[in-house]
Length: 136
Image (tube, rainbow, N blue to C red; front, side, top):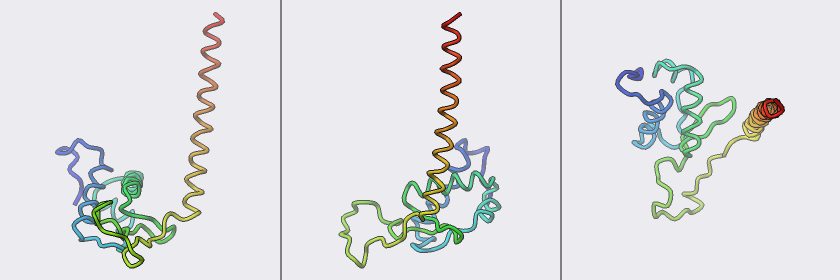
């Protein structure tokens, strides 16, 4: 089922995220279930690899899924229950799903540091350009 880019003007990653979100909230994908591979999602929705990654990143930020490096992405235990839905968490109902791995966090920090460095370099060039313009 490829996405209908002509009928829906939202970015493809939002469209794909909505479809996966519906599968999770409807129970078709249950807590602990593994999501299809990135390649399968690319083929299913007719989207690029980077779009799949943006889709998964969005679902992770919403707390619906988590990833295990080398194993894939999985539905969180608490994905089907809205926060504060009146359920009291006990040892039996608590979300015991592991969070992000240390490796994935380290990778994200490295990416952020690289982005910050690029921003600092750009700001430095802009400041030099502004200074040059003032001196004229």
